Amino acid sequence: MSVSLRINGKAVQVNSEPDTPLLWVIRDEVGLTGTKFGCGAKLCGACTVLLDGEPIRSCSTPLSRAAGRSVATVEGLSANNSHPLQKAWIQHDVPQCGYCQSGQLMSAAALLKANKNPSDAEIDEAMKGNICRCGTYVRVRAAIKTAAAEVRGGKA
Image (cartoon, rainbow, N blue to C red; front, side, top):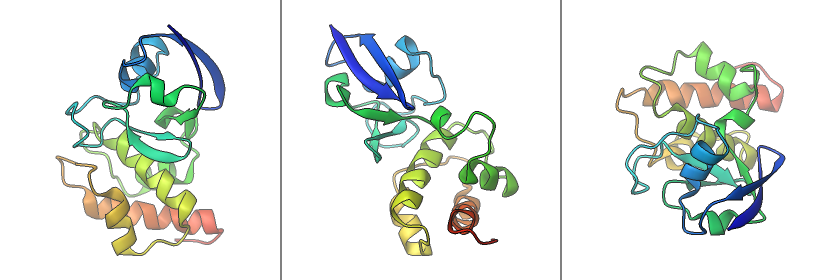
């Protein structure tokens, strides 16, 4: 079956069954491998992408739900690490093993789009469900605050 959608601003035509998890379409058919498979049960957040700006778990979202809609993956933030979140992630040395980072970044991107000055509690709420086995949660929060300051036009 042929399905049309937009991925990172580009029109894409894919030929997968409607019940195929969006994660596998993104990775295997489109070739964008930044989005990771973690648990397959929408519990860990490694597969988080944005569907029309809202964070979803692509491991359990069928392709049919994305038909005609806009999907953003970690590759869509920037090609050269110039997105405020990517810069802040590097500045705060957030990644350890790095496996959860694409999901963390996409959840953070959705948060900052909706709230350019989130409190610690708002950050924690937006990021819950994004599991980091390396335990860099404090650095994630600091990086989001730094990126938020840049988005607002100020210094961290």
